[in-house]
Image 1 (tube, rainbow, N blue to C red):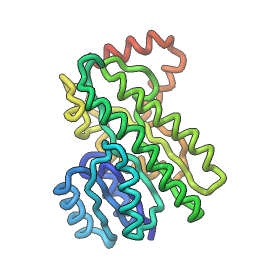
Image 2: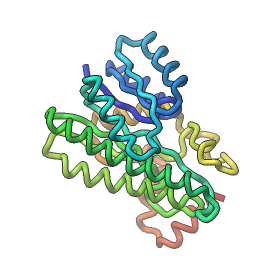
Image 3: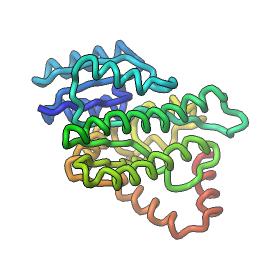
Length: 255
């Protein structure tokens, strides 16, 4: 049986992804800050599925956390077949009004930790002759977004980084998949401190819908995929829009 490491696994997309992979027979290594939620998820999974669940409570928004996580996995002699870099958060508001510390933590979590985990576990996967790395970007990666300037930029980084890494590893039997979700029912809006969560209401995908999409995209060996036809059409249309116009439209959507 294979083992999957999922970051940001305590709630939302990470939690549902853990349940999907457990149902498919994967052993799990789950990491997040909220120990109680991780413990509850472990109990739920072990009551439903015949898989092992290892928990590592850690704040991946801190520098050097990637190395610490990797060391804990190595110390427990766990072989990771699939790495899912799901942990990340957004921050709403004008750059000059945002908390500098939160901006730094977002950049560390969304980019630096993701990059370092991809490198550390990617090397082990190459040694083992196989593996999958799944990075969660966003449809925000496709255009600048005023009032979420840094978040959108971090997700553009994730998308471009993932595409390049996929090319570097294509002959080494390690498949890199970048997932680009749009608005999804999760804790994202609350954590990002949106003034209104209107865009996260109504007929939008659930975290479970996205989790199933993540699993299927990985199984199919996809490189870069957008979740949802409407999101795919929007991302494609941005390519043909003047950059200023795309930025203006994004700004209006964030108001």
